[in-house]
Image 1 (cartoon, rainbow, N blue to C red):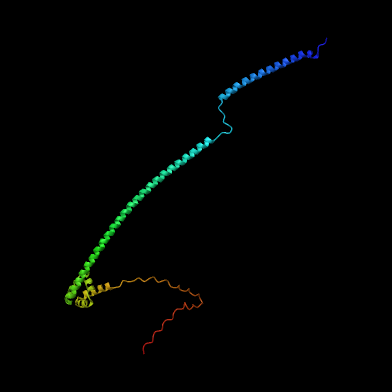
Image 2: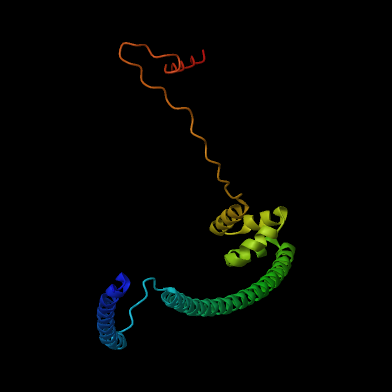
Length: 240
């Protein structure tokens, strides 16, 4: 009796399947061993190797540090400038105080000089008043004297007293006194009185420059009427 075809092929299929299963199992074992042996060194290398930087690092921390350094520099510069300005302000304040003290001293000196000037002016006014009184008294005295007696005194009197007294005397009273005085003394007194009566000279204002002289006429050309010299005046005929 013949077996069916499926039953005849079944042992071969089983053998092939077992072989394939064995090969697959062997491959899986090798792969597992390879993976196990590769993971340990990778883990060790990962533990020993330093961490790699990220591909896109964040520089925010560096910018903050740079900004902080710049701010510190600016603050330091401002602090130094502030110290310099404070020193300059103190120096200016000291100079202002010195100038103020000097101005006060100058004002005090000026006030003293003004007071002294007022005092001197008052004293001079008093002196002039007293001198005028003395001169008026002497004028009255010499005017009441005889001309000969007054002339005899005037001949030897100093000019500081003689000139003011003679200037205040009336002309009709002084005339006979001068006539009886020594000629030299009378002459000196007359000159001094005349000098006192002399009017001070007045300086004339500067005269503006006149028109410029015309240029010389070229050779062969007659000068114009402005350049012609005036004809000399004819002498007058002698009286007949």
